[in-house]
Amino acid sequence: MISNPPPWPNNCRCAVAITFDMDADSLVHLEQPTDSTDRINAISLLHYGPRIAVDRILSTYRRLGLQQTFFVPGWCVEQYPEVVRRMVDGGHEIGHHGYLHENPRNFDRQGQADLIDRGIDAISRVTGSRPVGYRAPLYNYSGVTTDLLIERDFSYDASLMGDDVPYILKTTSGQIVELPTHWGCDDWPPFAYIDDLNYRMPIRAPSDGLRGFMEEFDAAYKWGGLFVPVWHPFVTGRLARWTQVDNWLTLLVERGDVWITTMSNIANHIWGLQKDGTYEPRIDTLPYYKEPIST
Ligand SMILES: [Zn+2]
Image (cartoon, rainbow, N blue to C red):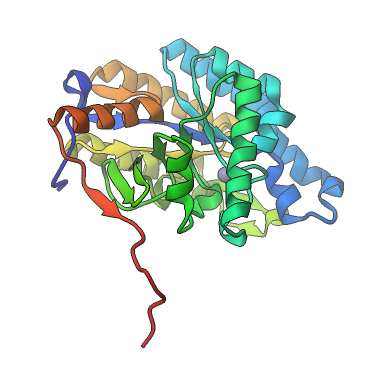
């Protein structure tokens, strides 16, 4: 089913990185800039992430001995530095996720570069180290993103959806590892209903919504793939959902043949395999098109 599965460490069957995007209330300030501060219900919903859910998630990881990856917009890093420090203290990775969760494609090349630099600066100041991974806000990866990341020595991107296993993005500037996911692994479609963000999906029961993710994992396990859920603390960190995830993760760890680690560890593994010649990742050369397509 997968033509080119990479060898995973310790003969593990597949790799898993639970990624949480801690967007918090950046979303409502971006979406409703004229009156976001008056939208108290939306802020309370989004504050649930940094104020309540993150510590719950960190506690599960601590109990299971897991290190995972959190993508955090620069503004959120500055707004919730203590929360981010607790992530770092737990051995977790902080990835780049824009500044105020802006859509990079609304900016020119310099504007996009500035947003990336502001995010790097915020993460560096609060955590003491530069991020090596990037996820574009709402997956809005642009035609210049690869070059901007390579110029800044990023190791990997986590915004694209082009494979079941890691692959390489190549431009004239160099290469970067892509650790792909897709919308079936994102918790917004099954669980997010947020009037103030104009996002209204029918909310599914926890077991029902989570079952989709677990089936995604089962396929990755069977065929040697990569499973990267894209979750949000204020969504999947809610009490009933996280109770079930906590149980499921416990069973996953007990299997002993699943590599559950940070995104940067997975990227380093792929770089290492490529370097020693034991595995050739698939390469996507960008840009896909040099000019607009028309009839
Ligand atoms: Zn986000």
